[in-house]
Length: 333
Image 1 (cartoon, rainbow, N blue to C red):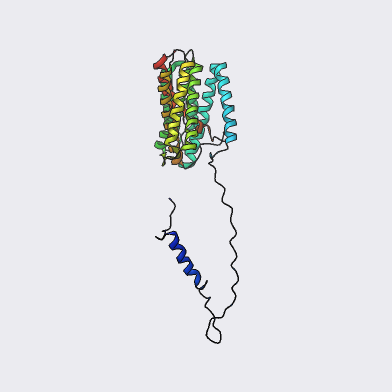
Image 2 (cartoon, rainbow, N blue to C red; image 1 turned 45 degrees about the horizontal axis):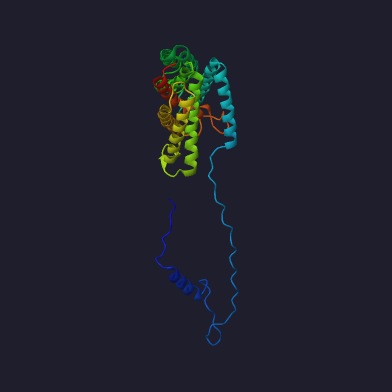
C-alpha cells in the first residue's frame, strides 16, 4: 500500500497559526534584514510573490481489459461461426476441427516448454497420437480413447530413445503430461458428439463454458475487489467467481430445459455450477503453467486471445465433467 507520511497532530486552526508565524520571518535563510546607518532595518519594498498557476485535475483512469477487445470479439465470433457450422453440418468435420485444435495446442505447449525450460517433449508422436486419440474416442468411445492414450505414451517413450539420454526423464514426463492434458481431455468432446443429440450436447458444453467466462469477466471487472488466487492469477476475484457461477447456472437451466432432450432445469443448475468450477480451475491451472514458464500467453495465433491453448484452458477440464453429467442425467444417447 502507498506510504503515507506522518501528519502532525494539529487542528486546522493551529496549523494556520504556525504557518503565519513562519511567514513573519525571513522567507529564505540568507534573507537577513539589512540595517541602515542608525541600526534599524531598512524598509525595502518586497516584490509580490507570484500566485501559483492552478493545475488541471488528472483525468480519472478507466479500467482496461488488457487486450484488444475489438480483435478479441472479432476472432471469437469467427471461431464460433466455424464451430457451429461444422457442428451442425457433418459430425465428422467437427471431429476434424477438434483434431486440428489439439495438434496446434500441442505444438504451442511443447514449443514453450523447450523455449523456457529446455524440455524437449517429442511433438511428432504427440501430434499423431493426439489426433488418433480424438478419432478413436469418436469411433470407439472411452475404451478407444484409453487405448490410444496408452499407445501415445508408449510412442513418446520410444521416440525419445533416439536422442542422448540426458534429460530423458523430464522430456518423456512432459510428453505424457501433454498427451493427457490436451488430446485426452479433448476426446470427451468427440464422445459427446456420438449421441443422437450430440451437436446440442457439444453446443451446451461450449455455451456454458463461454457464459461462465463471460460472467467472471463482467462481474469481476465491474465489482471485483477481493482476489481469488493472487499468487496464480492476480486478475481473478471472488466476485468474478460468483459471476461465473451465477451466469453458468442460469445458462445451464435454460440449456437443459430447451436444448437437451429429457433434461430438466434443476439438472441444468447442477451442470452450470460444475462448469463454472472446472472452467475456473482450468484457467488457474494454465495460469500456473504460464507463471512457471514466465510467459503471458501460450502463443500469438489468435489476435486478442493469445494462442489456441489460451482458449482451450477452460474447455479441456470441463469436457469430461459435462460428458459424465449428461450421461448420468439423460443417458449416453
